[in-house]
Length: 414
Image (cartoon, rainbow, N blue to C red; front, side):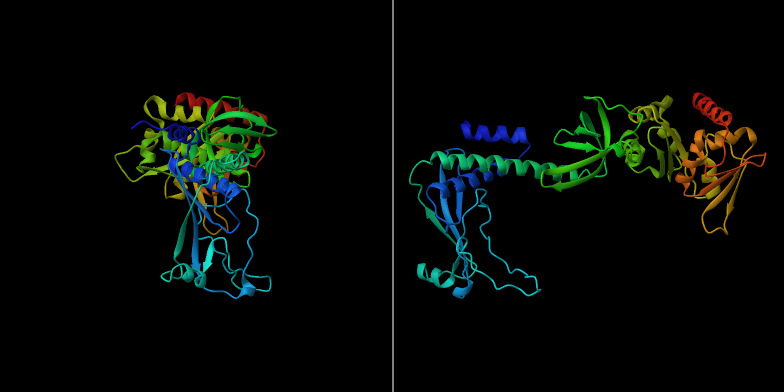
């Protein structure tokens, strides 16, 4: 059977707005109910419309719920109907409210959606409390211009609300995950990102200083938070969050995605360097080799996704001394002394003089990231007796340059 023009229009709206046919049909029925009230209804009617998109025909009903008899003092007069009339709720009762002094206000009768039992019995003695009385209504003629305008406003508003709700639910389910997005434009200090079914905001603090966000660039983003606001869903994404590294590792390395390799911790200075500690319970798997990939293919893809940010893959170990030794890679550690009597977790790491600059890293970065990765406060001691506390000891320009050169040599060697 061929589609009617109305059915075709509904399907087109569903495709463009990513909505279900049921929700669009419900919106049309809501709009028709508002139009009917505008031209033919009255304040005391709870209008429900059943619309057939195949024929374009509609049936109109007044639906009321039978409630107990209430004293006249509690009978609430009907008020003017707003344009956005909630016709989908057939049991729209006024529940007991709590007033300022903490006492419950008396229950009131709503003549628009309810009918008292004594009046229901007059219509039919078989009516009972809680029953819905559905009264068919006639459609005297075609809707007028004002009623049509009212229906149009209701449809636009309802579809917009449905679209916003769907967007919120879709991205709320993806909160704290990594997804693809396209740079849309800059708005003040914020970057707007197109996520296909929604637009996200990347605040200044979630941007990486060294990255350039040109319009049309496709990148991966970490969904930091999704909140519903009066203007629709607010989606905050980040490129600087540590968990973006974890998400990219999971998407690029199947062994991590299926749980064969576990990421134990991550330390990151966004745009510069990250250290990722991994482990596995499967002796047949080489965790570092799996992450690096054949000829470095996997790690190079990850580095590319992070815009050339350096990534160190560290083998986690339950022995703190061994884990700290691994975390200071690419420096070679001579000895690690764990201070067990200290209030805070502190380790003294001894290295040879020629490894001191490499262990510290440029600007103390290597030891600083190692400390974050392991959760230990690391003091580095060289052969000459120099002590660096968590990368905050003095470092000469020559040492900084040496550290950078040695890191570069290490990368080339790998």
